[in-house]
Length: 247
Length: 274
Image (cartoon, rainbow over all chains, first blue to last red; front, side, top):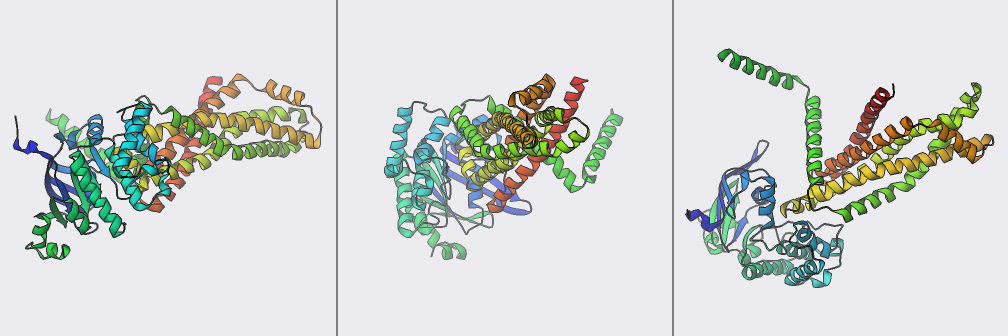
């Protein structure tokens, strides 16, 4: 039975999340089609990162429906959830590199652990290929503390790419970077989407990043999506907050 | 049927009210205990689930042993030395100076050596594991492992708990040996005793039931230090305060558990002996 909704890689209906008495997400719904780059924008602390964390069940969601890559996320058992997570890349705000490991070990770790390959030469080839995509082959034997903020994000992205994910979730990929590095990272996100045919959800409040990377934009305010559309749609929105935000 | 249902409902209400009547501290204590037990269950499941991280486990074992060796050496030696010096006047008063090596060896092997060494390990290893995992949690490294499906409990927790379970008994053996050396040195400060005579008295006074229960309880001490350290770090709060609290509570809780295990071990070994 082919449901029309199956076209969507991500299909979330009425996602609700609260921390104690504070409602962070209030019946949020989102659909993302294959190959689409969707930017979730909004002011700091409105729950953009919470949305991403609910999608990979780092936080427990209360939701009517949440399917990602055809899997019903809230009811998955631990094993199936782990398999799904291997198909979802997640780039953390600070890169979240394992600081006791070199860049090489950071990248080979998920490959080794998920038993994609145990052959050392094969793993090395995969690591070098992933680092080549983010143009950081020179940093292969460095430790995270020796890398700059932008380099950490690129290594984080390479670590995400090595598992060849179908969908990548970016949590503030350009926060804390200078405008040039920020633009480079945004271009890299776009290049990766075209090269690997991935679907992406980018949580950001960086308008340059949004403009470069997103096909579609959703604006989150007070726990709800208040506007959806392209960058130009946002600039001409009926809502004052959205127009102000995109000025 | 209706009466039975009513009775069940009444019982449920009573049970709920008993829980609600408990002070908040007691409720938190029971919740924390249940969480630790659940975490221990997760550890045992992950322990038998591949992939097995032999290299990481050996690295952790080495790190834990190496980091604690100097401290355990000094405290072990001083422990034996002080115990002998403190006991000597009393033993002389009772005319039992010749029993001093036997008394020191039994108290060191049975009780003082394991407990003191375990407490030192709780302070040194427990806090270090709690802080390390806490900072991994704060910098989202554990989340990163989780979302890539690499099962952090298997990699981060299991390896450390096995390492402490293996290393603490070895460190206790080592500390016991140094405590006996300290005792021998203390004896020779005031009188003369050959090493062969000293060892003869020590080994002659120690029996199977002195060594085996003491060794078994050190395995539990090591397990508790590793489990509590990893638990506190793994579920540490956000921010630097969270890391500090994780390290601190890891030490406090594991020290408390060491005493509880010690108490149980005494009861069990007494039950087996008499």
